[in-house]
Image 1 (tube, rainbow, N blue to C red):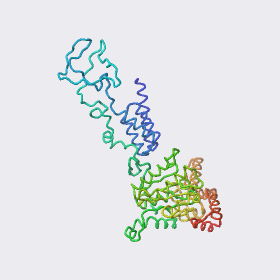
Image 2: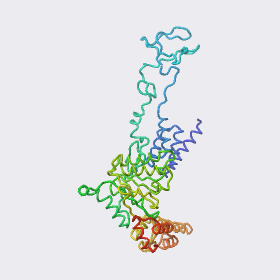
Image 3: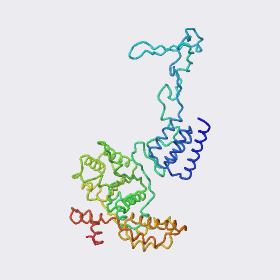
Image 4: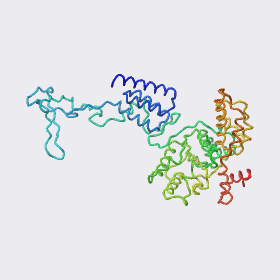
Length: 475
């Protein structure tokens, strides 16, 4: 490689390092730098950059692939020779038919080189003009790249040696350093969010306290009343109202591990794999107990079997089996389900011992809307904002709608600053204009819910929804 090419490569690497320093969270940029460093032979630097990428996203496929390549590049190559791994023949060596002095006075056994299938022994004598093959050393010396006694490379020892630098493969690492086992399929988290971070929603908090929190915090009373530390609760309601946020808050309140699982994490096109994924999920939750398992889009995972395909029927059956804990105890495993369409969930999932308790998560009330506005405006330059007035203006809006209002007001202030060349604050006028232009995103959902409550089968599951529809004069 010429000096010019080397100089250009060094300049490229320096430029990439400067870019990574400016954008430390850009995974693609950091991995590109590691790839260039690996190509330039800078193995240690490449490993360091891949490690930094894995610290951001431990499951990144490209990062794991680059780490494997870097470790392979760092491993010493085995020596190659015509007689690799074969002991020197006893007696005087012969070169060109002439006896040569034997450097090893002690005779060694000649290995049997006869092919297993029969036939002649291959002629291993050196050809004319070729010197004697050097003695590879004692017969019991390990070959480079292999363990003792000629065994395969000792991966366990290598992982132990690199354990402080390289995360073990296929192990989930959460943001706060919690790790699961090597057989764990899902990433376990330890959320720090609690119900105190959830604005308003007093009825939802009360239901969660009765179902999960109070029994766990009072073990003596729980034992006295025979309250089980297992169960499930189904949260339903329109999209964008914070069901996932509440589930994390419950886990944080319990100090429990949190496994958040969506449809794509479970369903698999191969026969039996979806059921196996569900089983592994609950096995992991039992090992981590106390643990909160959050099943999002339960209407898909637990779809009515009367309307489901054969493959989905077996998935629902497996979910029922895991909830019942037929093979294992589910003590300490709290299952929270979330759905926008509770009427599509199989009735068997709502029977006692499964998702036998339900709570409707509706658009945030006025105190909750103030909290949502405060959250989205806290880190932005605002002036003269009246949160109470904004909360009154946005009755019926979801948390997602309020986030959109704040984003629209921010864009208006930013573009105005670009036009005038003078940065300005986000004002109440910006937020009021954005709120006036934003319509609630749940109109269609409420219409469907009204039809279900009015004309569908209702065993009392939707009593809270019915009360809300009457209150909002939609029923």
